[in-house]
Length: 482
Image (tube, rainbow, N blue to C red; front, side):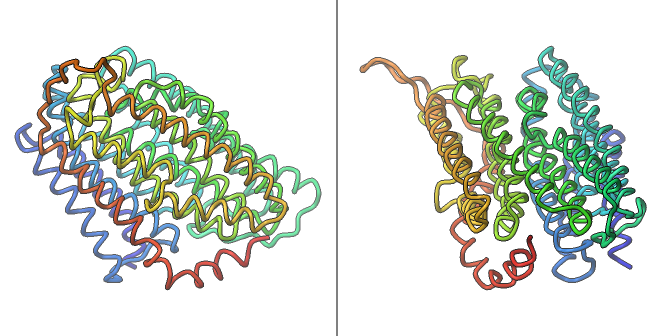
């Protein structure tokens, strides 16, 4: 009963807290943020106490990720928006509007995690899209408004295709549209129904792939991520993109017994490889820190798509990668926001250089996050990427794709390794006086520092934590795949 109630209490409770931002005086916004954090912590703590459970391990897993990173997003938003408002002259109404929309965005992400009905999942991803579009345009600068316009035009077209594809696919396999816990269809399809099921599945993949930023439907993503406020970019990259991919996985799982799984898996592998190729081709040319991490997000969503397509152990890696990428990318986007506040730009050609010398904490967190996101051991993304590629090697037919993916991952590693020093260090002649240090406010640094420790310890402790569960995970997810 508590689990069913939580399906509504969590998003509705967050929506009520969001509305409180508009009501309370501007000086009391911190109290409302504290209430939002306490609300998320309560539902997190209720899980191990068995006061409620999500609709299956996948829903519970994604909710935990959403709750933890949303807490960091709310925490970081306080000092970040305060300084953003000071630098750009935001009115009290604009500040309140940001926090109201940001917590509504979190509410939609929580719904995306715990709801399982496909129509309601579509509504949740639409709510996440619309709130994040307005947040992207919230700075009201020309670049932000243009990015938001491209974002809504491209992704809303994708949303329409996703809805139509979902309805067509589920109708073709005989699965009801309005059940809360859809199960895999055992219906044997005629050739005509199988044809329509595949058309619907591919339409849904295109639609939700647009929401997820998979190439070639990614065109909105670099602009939106680079123009949105840093906490919004973090949740967009880490949670909303992955949430769209989880809808695809759920839908394909329902269809897997009625439609040849290879057709669905090959589509995921193709888009995953294409996403890695696009990321590899554009990363080397980036001079804006947020845009760099935006193209990196395309890579990692591509890796998640590959893991889902390879199946088996790679599927374990894909689910794990949702967390490892989200935590590392949240750290990096928050760090990019700090760079923008301190240097009035996140562009390496417009003053954001010598960060390691001028702002040691900010530079160290940039170096740490960069090492994590490219998959260096012992950071957590290394383990999840390794599982995805090792799982692909386990499938003989997928080995050529694994080789291509590994080559592209190496190219992306080289591209990021070449670009990041442009922010960390200042090129100049020997004997040139060093640039003056910049004061780093503790309120901006502390949330990122705590998250940085989490990223580091997660990578070191992950093998120990996973070891007792390894046989169970493989037996549950590895053996049953094609």
